[in-house]
Amino acid sequence: MSQAISKKKRSPVFQEQDLQTQELREKGILFGVGIVIPLFILILWELTTRQGWVDELFLPSLSGIVTEFLAMANKGYAGTPLIVHVLGSLRRVFIAFSIGTVVGLLLGLLMGYYKYVRAAFY
Image 1 (cartoon, rainbow, N blue to C red):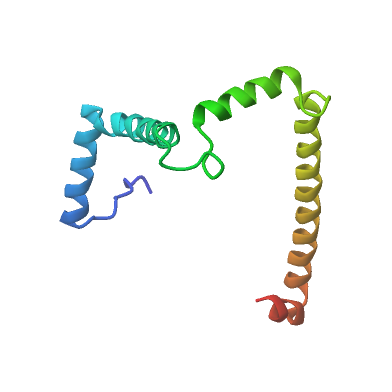
Image 2 (cartoon, one colour):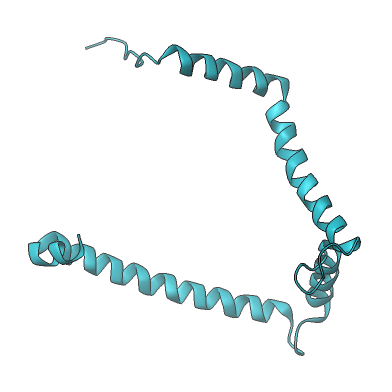
């Protein structure tokens, strides 16, 4: 019973891909790509709106969004602090999640006990 658990043999193609991925990880290239691509997208977004290639009505500038968010965080919205609106939204999400959980559990139990219910939903 003390046998070592053997790993499944992988095809040479997958082994080669694993080696290439490992080499890229060691060089930090994958990490760099993970940072550079999102930054490139954000810069392109800002450039697109600043140059007027896309109307700000359809694609607001990134700097405008950040500025407006900071203003709302400081002053609130419609005379009410932003945290009140955030907590109200989180409350709705929690209620909806709870209702979905209860309905899902009850339906799952019914499907487990009655084959006709299972057939209706399966």
